[in-house]
Length: 76
Image 1: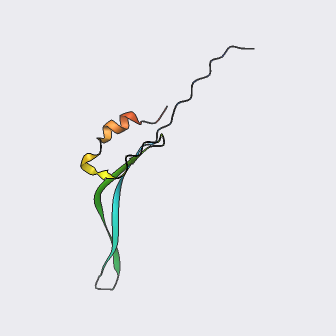
Image 2: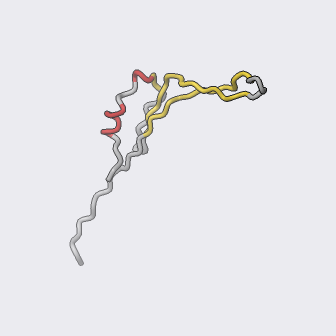
Image 3: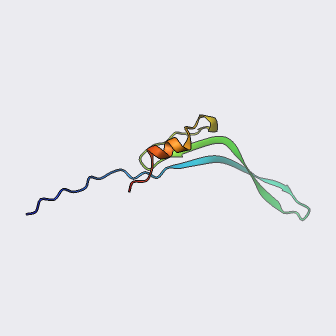
């Protein structure tokens, strides 16, 4: 029997910061075509595969992306 130390398991992080977007059909153009209009609501959510979920918050209240990324960088 050999003595080997197994490497410990560590949590993989997959951080995503998503903008909330709303959309609607715009008015018809001169040819009768209606294009989809989209705009940001000012709300964002950060989620990570480790369980982080900030819920929808105002963009100004979200922690800086660099700070979140440092805490939730992918495992090597």
